[in-house]
Structure formats: structure tokens, C-alpha cells
Image (cartoon, rainbow, N blue to C red; front, side, top):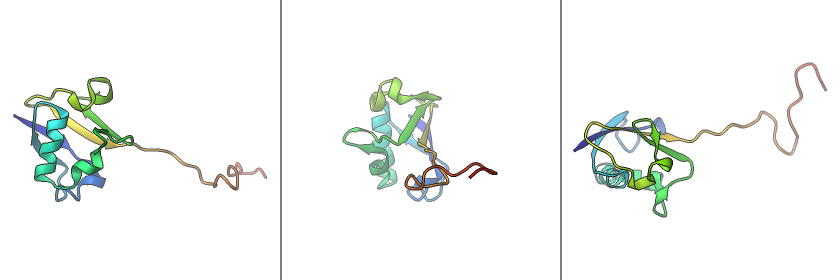
Length: 106
């Protein structure tokens, strides 16, 4: 069974620049193994110690797998899996300097 896996820009070096690839498996874990077989090195970027890496989000048909069975989440023919790196914010000033002043204030 084929499942479309959408690849974020940061991981496209493993998929020869492809935005989406096909993978097979009945669970996300099997899908990741199939991705690894066809795109060596990608699994290490997605999974650590048998779990999805902390700063990687995986969705099956818009459902976060952390709430649907993690790597054992079922996937079926025609499903779409989206891999998204987590995004964190920052500030203009450094922690040592404290927050940046508001415009017009000192």
C-alpha cells in the first residue's frame, strides 16, 4: 500500500529535493523504515530511541501521532503523512543583555 509522505525543506536533501515521496507500511514505524530503505539517513533525523524525536511532529491525515499511537499509528492506502520540524521562537536581545527595549524607551 502506498502512502504519500510530505517532506519538509530541511529533510529534502535525503529525498533528492522531492517535496513528497511514496512509502509503504501499515504503521508509521513501518513507513519510516521504508523511507530509510529508499532515502538512507532520514530515519535518524526522525526517530531516536524508538520514539519520534522531540522536535519533529508527524501527522497522519492532520492528526498528530503523539495522540494516536505514536509510531504504531496505523496508516492506510491513500493516507497522507506530513513531517514538520517544530518551530521555536526567540528574541532579538540575548538573555545576558535582557530583553530588547521597546522603541522610544530606554
